[in-house]
Length: 299
Image 1 (tube, rainbow, N blue to C red):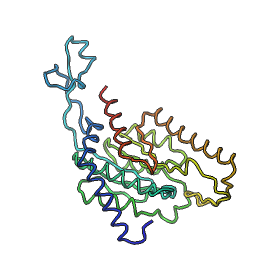
Image 2 (image 1 turned 60 degrees about the vertical axis):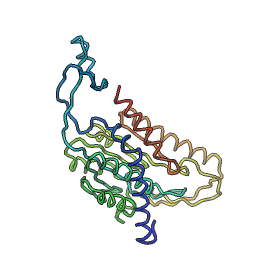
Image 3 (image 1 turned 90 degrees about the vertical axis):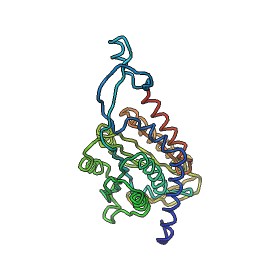
Image 4 (image 1 turned 120 degrees about the horizontal axis):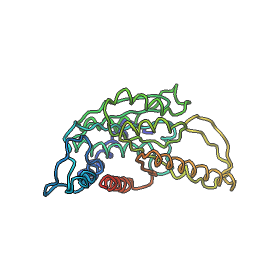
């Protein structure tokens, strides 16, 4: 993607600057509110006192005792945040200014700086046809630089370029390295099969947020006559008449149904999700998601 190390370094610095600016201005507060209560465990229930957060009221105990009681939590441990990023071939596609992989790096940087400001540790797991690279969770701004660099520059092993994306292997690896409940941001285009069981398990074991990255050309293809397509995952080459109305309609319907299935799956498993296209202003969409999450948790 990059012609020289200088270009890669420039891109990393641009992402760092943008992420740090957004976090310092508004984003860290949104992150902390969305994950309110993280790193805490239940301690006791006591009578409500003036100044207590009304959202901490235990209504069942209140009803039994006849007066307000609140749940009290205590610090448990610092939170671990893991970014799980799909680097398979389809993630290196982009019909606009930005590849999906670049968007993955920007989102990871933004969330990582917000987590760092909140005192959390962050780590990175990169996968494609297998586990490609792992950075154990820790703190430090230099650590985040390495995360951005690895997402942008990493290339899957040649032996794996013809294999399907191994999401099951990624979740199995996480069971080995994450010993406590953590926040997992799973960033992918989810152009894979057999994701339901691995993500269902991951959603039960950890606080899972799936971020689905899309490109508009993956949803709708313009009339361009006969075009040779290459499957980014399998490298299979096939010729398509993009001016064929029936073919375009069938393609668009299949992609729409894929997204509908993915959405229904997330909802049925109560897995938090964000759907982003690489031409969107992703910060606004992530902030809206965090506010919905905060509102839901405050009920």
